[in-house]
Amino acid sequence: MEYRTFGRTGLRVSVAGMGAGGPSQLGKKTGRSEEESIAVVRRALELGVNYIDTAEAYGTEEIVGKAIRGFDRDSLVVATKKNAFREGEPVPAKEFAAGVESCLKRLGVETIDVFHFHGARLEQYRHICDELVPVLQSMQKAGKIRHLAVSEHFASDFEHELLQQAIEDDLFDVVMVGFNILNQTARRRVLPATRKKGIATECMFAVRRAFSNPVRLREILVNLRRSDEIDADAVDLLKPLEWVLEESDARTLPEAAYRFCRHEPGIDVVLTGTGNIRHLEENVTSLLRPPLPEEVVKRLRGIFGRVHSVNGS
Image 1 (cartoon, rainbow, N blue to C red):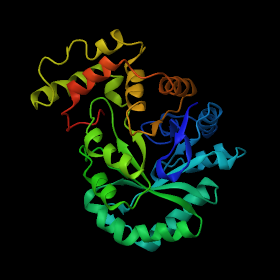
Image 2 (spheres, rainbow, N blue to C red; image 1 turned 135 degrees about the horizontal axis):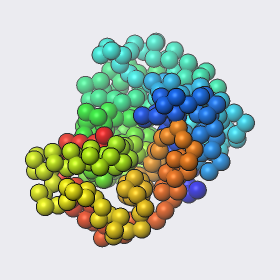
Image 3 (spheres, rainbow, N blue to C red; image 1 turned 30 degrees about the vertical axis):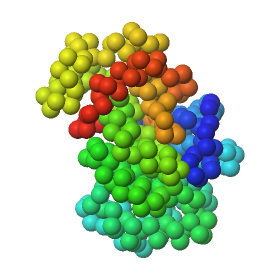
């Protein structure tokens, strides 16, 4: 495993992070038993992964808590998240504080290393800053949280408006940002500022459905041509992105997608989520491989450099 310093937090983190959400939720949504899900997390730890990201909304905090039992707590970075709004209404400060206490209990830890506002939207930002940030700051002083963080709602915020505001206000040590081959807007709108301020970054959406589903990828590319976000002759719709494999040593498009994100300047941790140990091992191997050839990266940046309306799902 390779490790790096996690921005100004000073934490040492694995470049591959274990994501406990996504379509699988450690296998919870695909019929895996709790024991099987625990085994996936434990295999990640055996592979050297020391960054684990979960959330109240995923329902996997207890699984993570059971999986990390017996491991050196000081060597792990445990991150979780809680929504600032519920059914369109702001969560009151007192209720939010109680929710954080519940996260600690489910995880079975005394301190959460990185605590995010989950999937935050720009219209929620004032409530987060005015009412809820003070809650986390108080818990930070009490030693229950180490670092404040925010994850964006990338499914609706393709151009990172929330993160741009959050980075400008400099309230968070860590941000979770959507970034992948198809949507590279973070390179312009997020990563220069996080690098300048030493804000740590977690990359989500590195691999989504389009990278393993050629039909979905073609649909996205057709729409991007119609919206003039990619040039009409930029890709062969009959063989979407097959040239990436032909001109590199990547064995699959998901592998290429992971490597593209892993070696993007400004990305600290790339999250990968699965409920399958073999799939986990493949993903970690991909994230530890060298950068794609410079010409391949340059071409991918050129083709998708002005895309701003998709996230790859």
